[in-house]
Image (cartoon, rainbow, N blue to C red; front, side, top):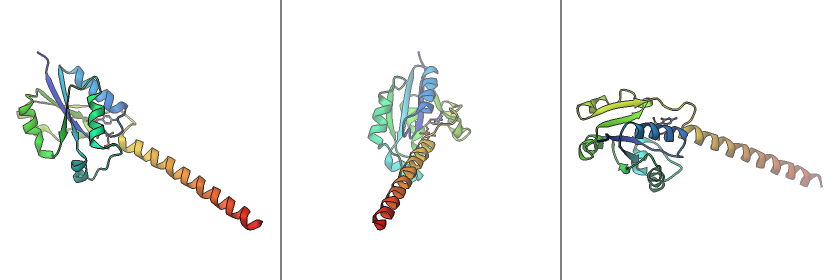
Length: 152
Ligand code: CTP
């Protein structure tokens, strides 16, 4: 029988790093559960997403590598989830390397290499830079128009 795998994350602005992680996780076994951080839990973590929880969960549910989507409400639920869902492998990207080794009394714990040069944070920074460029352009336009108006 295939193994049951679980992973946790925010998955904001679903990107290629997320796809590759989920593809590799699905490749480890038979059944993949993804626990998606709720907006309330992200607020506790000091994180604000562009995409609200319900949509992030729906997007993950539409991904062919994902069999089950659950909410992640707090740090402490992992042990209960692993036991209830009869999980064989708990896996995360290696930005979390070593952080969840205490779960290894319940199941295998894996850390997979992250995809380089992409993150939700970098995408947000890119969008903010675009917005700042546009604001600058609008400011210049207003200054030019004002200068022309006062020259009349
Ligand atoms: N992940 C990955 N490769 C990336 C980005 C994320 O493998 N380039 C993995 C993370 O290691 C994690 C999962 O995807 O196991 C969900 O990560 P999440 O924190 O939602 O993605 P990030 O893009 O890292 O988001 P942020 O910038 O907000 O931390």
